[in-house]
Image (tube, rainbow, N blue to C red; front, side, top):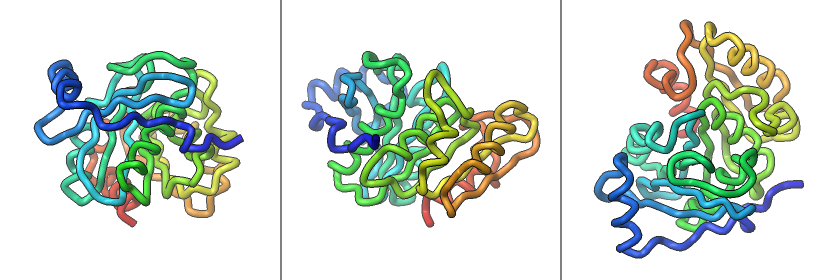
Length: 231
């Protein structure tokens, strides 16, 4: 059953005092960026930072043992190119907590709801490693559907999230990025690419063993991702 984004209650913009407190404990936020506090459908508290304006938006989901800071450089680059970006802390990471530990997809859905409430009419998803699995699962469940999804080294399964089933049931345009020497993750990306039901799908394989968001340091990989988001 699809998760209706409308059921993921994104809280209103925080008051100035709340924003100041968030900035004080967030070493990655900069002036002009907005700390947001969301409530996922199962009650999890989800923290993130929103950057930029516009009607095309991107949710950014970090990898294991990381947080939203991982994606803030990309969020700012996207904002400079006219996108609205929201980098989140998944539940039990950074400033997010609560809810079912396996339902990272609900955190993504809450972020999509927030961006749509802020005026985004086109939303895309990017996730690294476990975040890649989360965005693939979320893309298969969110309705109205998102415009595209990118998995950077996302495994086929992560703590109850089944990306194989998700891509098999989803027609959302999808891109996979993986390093050839990142062994199991490379095999997983190839498998997911073949299993994906979407007609618009592609995979980019890098040489070496880079993993997750670190692959975006390779110009060709970043160009592949940015070109897809801007299509």
